[in-house]
Amino acid sequence: MYAIGIDVGTTNCKVCLYRLAELQLIKKHSFITPKKSSEYGSDFDISGLWLGIVDGLSRVATAVSDPENIVTISVASVGEAGVLLDADDRVMGPVMTWYDTRTQPQLEHIVSRIGESRLYEITGIPAHSNYSLNKILWLIEHCEHQTPASWLCMAEYVAFRLSGVKRAEYSLASRTLAFDITQDCWSAEICSAVDIPIGLFSPLVAAGTPTGELLAELSEATGISRSAKISISGHDHMVGSVAVGITEEQQILNSTGTTEGLLVVLSKPAATERYYQSRVSNGHHVLREAYTLYASLPSAGYAIEWFSHLFNLKPADFTSMTRWLMNKGAAETPTDSFLIPHLRGSGPPKRTIYAKGLMYGVEDRTDPEAFLKAVFHGLCYELRHLLETYESLTGSRWPSLMVIGAACQNPYWLQLKATILNREIVACKIPEAVSRGAALLGARGAGFEPGDVSLPAESLERYQPDAKSAERFDIVYQQIYKQLYETKIHIENQMNRT
Image (cartoon, rainbow, N blue to C red; front, top):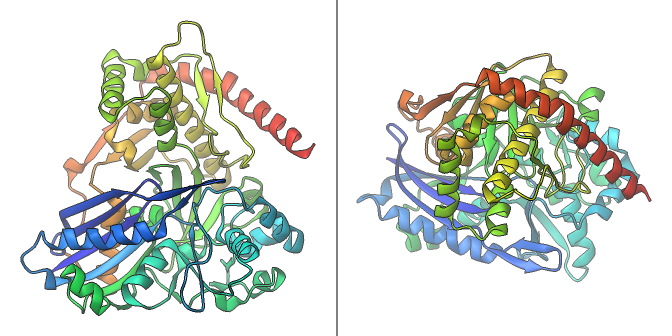
């Protein structure tokens, strides 16, 4: 038997077919997440995305001689982004990316009705324009000729198109700003305060729970059995954590992609004043009785993409450049140059959409290789700042971080993480962790328990900090990076108030 895991990402979408016995990846189809240019930047092209997923299902199904034995399809996606539908299930307005900032006026309206601290107390997440509720209010305001009937986050929408059944999943619900994290339900208080019907949100199901079966027309188009169970596996970072076994509070995951974040498993939400002041997010885990502490840095892989475009580098050129830096020993060579990578605003503990990137240490001799070093140094300093925030809040210290995602293909970045964070880095080199987690959750939810899904030792690569270099990086971090960070954020906040 087989299971399919779908990962709807910011940059790429992946449709992956696994043999259930040992959760072995049989076939992967990947395509660039289609977007449309707009006056605000870009929106998801939801029609193109859907066609890409159907095509991907068809392609992976041909990899096996018995596609009727594909028993589950489960979908993970980015958080915050979603689709507003009218009573006839027509898409209302644009499908905004999760990082879209046009909704700042809607956030200000929400805060004026409820208050930031009360919002955090209810939802466990800090007020921010990224969250779904802001997008819903913007769409209602700008689509006056249509009456909204339902909101579905991205994975929920794809699952709806596959099965015809609308359901919401807990980990995605907890990224909407309309979910009560302590009561485990949609917040009547928030919906009432902003004048939207609570019925806009679908009934909640646990990650991996079947919501229906594959529609007949899709079975015919893809060759996959009509009886295949469809489910929502949830928020991509949480889904990826399941794939690599991050299930206990003693562990911490660094999930990397377009963004990168730190995820810790909690037994209950931590929506106290101290956590609120640091702007870290509580959420529901995809594991039903667990919660998460999660914070995202908006630019990680995106900063690398930005650098590549800036210098017009092809992927092979970029790979060659990082390999050259690694061979040169540059991963252990501190410099005073770095980028504060606030290209799409800043993450915790000073989270704001008004933050801008800042390059420090540029000289007349700065070449593309030195510039790239500065980008990577800055990404690692930013991650260290977030890690220290976590440890200050929780009282824990994590001597080792597990890494999944794009960074695992870049030994230079991994060695820098180890040295600048002064921790062991364990790179989990399993392909497509999010799709794997989605397939695992979907299979279990449908009653199919895979065999041994523990990670093989050869999939884990360990990086240790260089002690001497760590001391020198620490000086730059403490004496320059943190000082410039605080000054920059202060100036930006002052400018925003004027």
